[in-house]
Length: 163
Ligand SMILES: CC(C)(COP(=O)(O)OP(=O)(O)OC[C@H]1O[C@@H](n2cnc3c(N)ncnc32)[C@H](O)[C@@H]1OP(=O)(O)O)[C@@H](O)C(=O)NCCC(=O)NCCS
Image 1 (cartoon, rainbow, N blue to C red):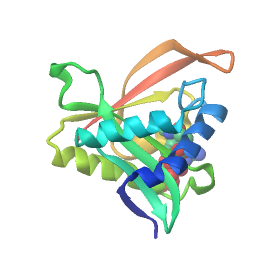
Image 2: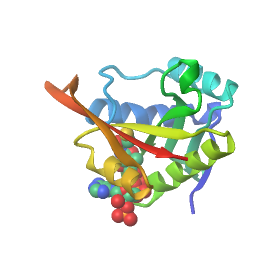
Image 3: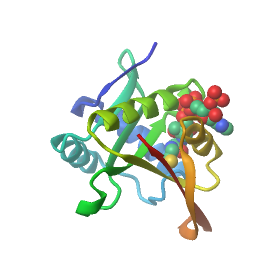
């Protein structure tokens, strides 16, 4: 059974590969340029330095997915709200790993005294919407045509849950 643990710097090449596949081939993330190892290293250090979780799901030496949360909006009044993200390698999707990562993030959020988690999801991402609904998230709002990738406008759905 895969284990969920805190990410280390040694996990970054695998995290980068999973993220860059999603950037290249999906609408899950609206970057148009691939991420670099250097930028991921800063991200990991910044998050872990602030006590924020960066989790991986691993089977032996193989990283199958990762998840994290950070500021929803970087202002004091939002300090107990976080925005999270979850990525599972396409070859390992549909095995319950996304759900397990989300449950682990919720547990960390509870332990940290947070109040609300927000997922910002492309409206056509049925897998992510179903995953969040199953975990008790509800649709809180929909922003029409706020994104653009692969030559078309994209809607963003916010899903929230009190932890
Ligand atoms: C969204 C994602 C994280 C789901 O991870 P996963 O490990 O495949 O999901 P799970 O196996 O834990 O599935 C949990 C639930 O999500 C739903 N789900 C998952 N994949 C689905 C699909 N392709 N279609 C419809 N529902 C789906 C189901 O309700 C499933 O529960 P069930 O198996 O009991 O029916 C994964 O598809 C992924 O990494 N996608 C690319 C990146 C991405 O979209 N990230 C989220 C950005 S907001």
